[in-house]
Amino acid sequence: MLRYTVLRIALFFACFGVLWLLGMRSQEQQLLAVAGAAVVSMVLSFIFLRPLQQDISDKINARVSRRMAQRQEREQHGGAAVTDDLDAAAEDAEAEAAETDTGNRPRD
Image (cartoon, rainbow, N blue to C red; front, side):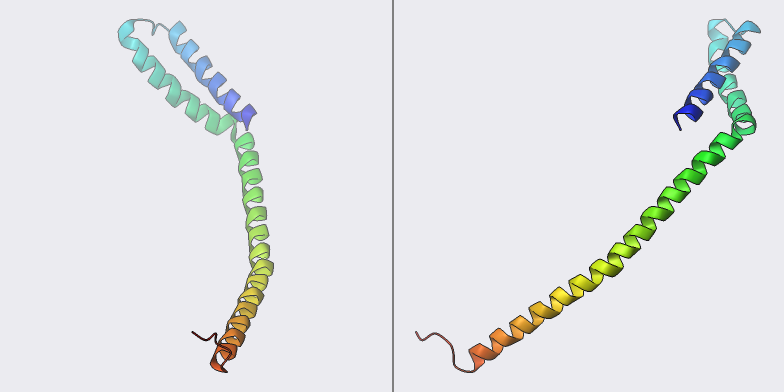
């Protein structure tokens, strides 16, 4: 990813340098030169840096897919443990309620 970013920045400065050498040096033309360099470098990076961009996209997609699979696996295994804990807590609450109903209450 760093390589792609560095190449994009280098391409921008190369385009800006070419426009500067072509005569866009005055104060009024500098903003136009920056905008032109941005547009030209964007088009050139889309054409020439496409394999790098696709590689980065594939890596990000694989990482997201792997994390989603890990999350689903945790939810499936962890969800069963949470359900078991809730069942045990409900049974304990029922047992305590039954004890208090049978007369095991403390006297005032």
